Image (cartoon, rainbow, N blue to C red):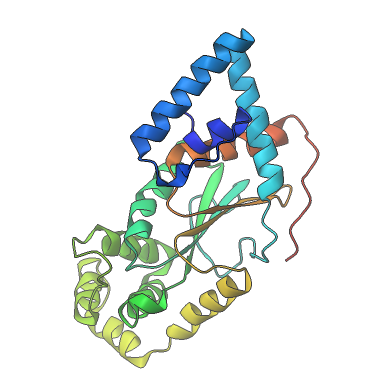
Length: 267
């Protein structure tokens, strides 16, 4: 039974005044395991009953965490990985120079692959000022890749940026972006002219403006959006794969049994 430690403690009604946020991952995991075992013994719960209690806690978490931010659902001009008609959309505001975004990029790929058409992924730009101008140039380059090669080129370009080994927080250079585009089969000259013109920065800055309106201040900023009910759950940071799948599973389960839609966030 794999459960995010924070969600496990929440589902068990756990409260502790100690500075848990400063604990190591191992210490927190040991603490949760001990408390689970203690609660099982005290309450005489089976593991199935405990799982049900955890699921109830996650539903409470979903209801509590519905994003009040004005995050937009999937848009016609969004870069979408996966089936555009999927029920669940993972909306990510990201920064190509952010090491946590690099970590989450692999997690998001894994999520879409796991759900086989039920979940898609929207990538929106949010280059942080501390990483500029490099992060914004990389985002503009990704838009140039999309302009020249379409959606597939955008995602291939983004994957390559995150796959490149470089020191933490260091964005790719403009010359490296041109070489990367050529590696993907895009016309080097056309790509360089696009990048040099700066015209795609308008799309990047539009994403940033929308993100700021939604209350985003850091990256990766993720939202799990249920396209059938309008439920929007903020999942800020490079959270573990299991935390996302728990939330997504509950949203899909609610839909399959005809559960009442949650209140829609204002758009």
